[in-house]
Length: 173
Image 1 (cartoon, rainbow, N blue to C red):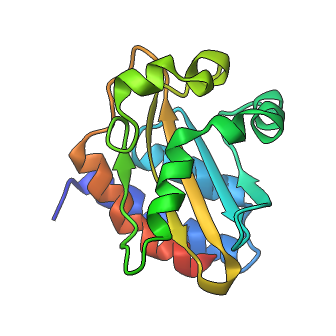
Image 2 (cartoon, helix red, strand yellow):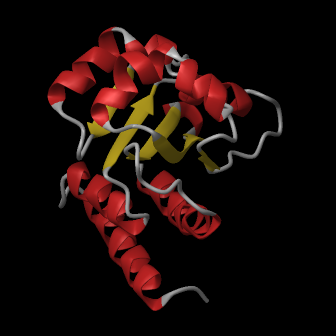
């Protein structure tokens, strides 16, 4: 089922994922295909170690290098959304879900946060859709797709599309 354009994008994304896993395509192409799938302006795909200490950024289309540096240096500690998604994963028997803005961090809390005011506003990270997925012994995979202030929030149809893509992403990683 679903919209034919969406299904075509999903198929294209799935091919990109397996090409990247095989070393044939850069992960940036996967990030771009993920952003296109849900009409996001930017994307961030990471692999975090099991302790959640280090995180390798696989790609960040639409997010400038200075933002990546600021996030790693300062704002990762203030990223309520990723922290809560990761914490939810540590609950025994938890099923990782795809979340959209407002569901893990209430909007009024987000808009008051250091993350938004010091960082997210500047780089267009107003609305998010994403997940933190377990990768077994390899750790976890934080994925965030973003839209700037003045855009529409991500909707349920987009959440379902991303949900269809994520198992391929996990397998590819």
